[in-house]
Image (tube, rainbow, N blue to C red; front, side):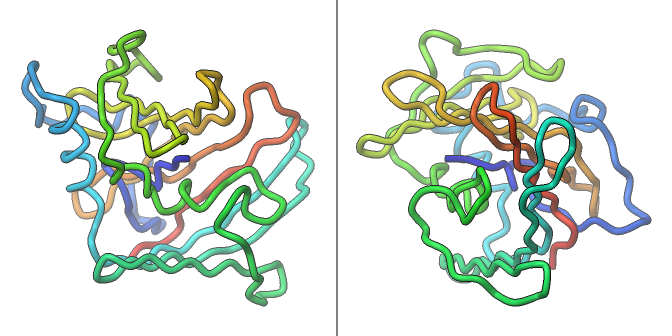
Length: 213
């Protein structure tokens, strides 16, 4: 599926940085025309993701009451088209994981952190939703498909920021992801906190971006 470590995408998180709600942050000059195609919108999303980057942060899985049930730190590196992910436990020891399915005992997947679905070639507007408001922002809604996998994404029609995504199975939402806050770094807004989980679940996993190099 998904993340947004996405769209007006990655940024370091330092004390001097400004943090904002999604709606407050996305007030930039429009980058798309009203008649932008689905392919143009996805290309705009892709262009925002640095080709070479190192992202550090942490992953926490909590109950709705706030009880922590899993906690990890991660380092994600992208270089020359290759992505490497290292996950560490509370003691700083790297842990093995499988790329298929959920990562360890969290709700996130490999795709949540790497955004690989943005490079799938079957791209179209969602004929049911097509345009929808999320967090007060008008978005175009697209479907991305690869074999039997489908992801629905919400992209800000002004800036190209991906604000929300759903993994679909037989047309039903299996997991959902949304950005809850952004930070600004070198004049670029990027997700700071991202939440992932099945609809209505007792537990939800938060991805926090702390630093980007």
